[in-house]
Image 1 (tube, rainbow, N blue to C red):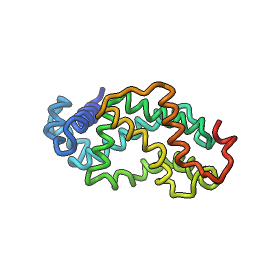
Image 2 (cartoon, one colour; image 1 turned 30 degrees about the vertical axis):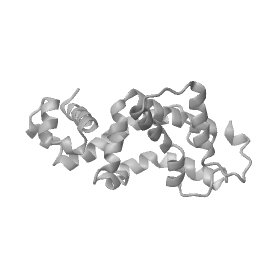
Image 3 (cartoon, rainbow, N blue to C red; image 1 turned 135 degrees about the horizontal axis):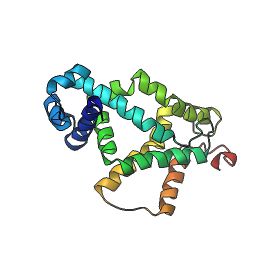
Image 4 (tube, rainbow, N blue to C red; image 1 turned 90 degrees about the horizontal axis):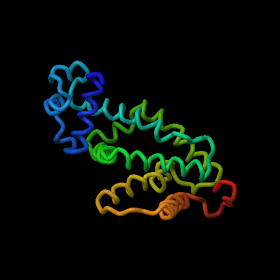
Length: 196
């Protein structure tokens, strides 16, 4: 692992364990086993480190989220795959959820979400929801609202499972996925073909 990757890994661990206020250049340098000056070769300051870490993390997670998904096909099958992929990230990488919550509550949160690289990565996912809305499959709400009512529940459920340890059976998990899909379906539209 090269030095920059070690710095990212150390920063991600600190962020997950101690939050943004526990993250400092000195603490990251110590955890990454590099000199503080080395960090400044890659990042201008703590905020720059956070911005680049966020982008780096999303670039790593994006292929995992999209794995096996035919994003141009607006269907329950594709939605279910997205849901399970996101759930697997939170299950297999416990710090992912902690870091997500830290990013969202940080002073840089809104800025990070508007990063052009990040927005371009998630554009196909936004098109998925927009196409469903335009086809009348989904209720007529802004894409961000559709995402909040559906896929955002994955993180909420992961947070609940972390705070109050419980296990869902496969049947219960399927019910959760279906319920989150149903939350965005247009009740005035026949969804026979879209649900398979």
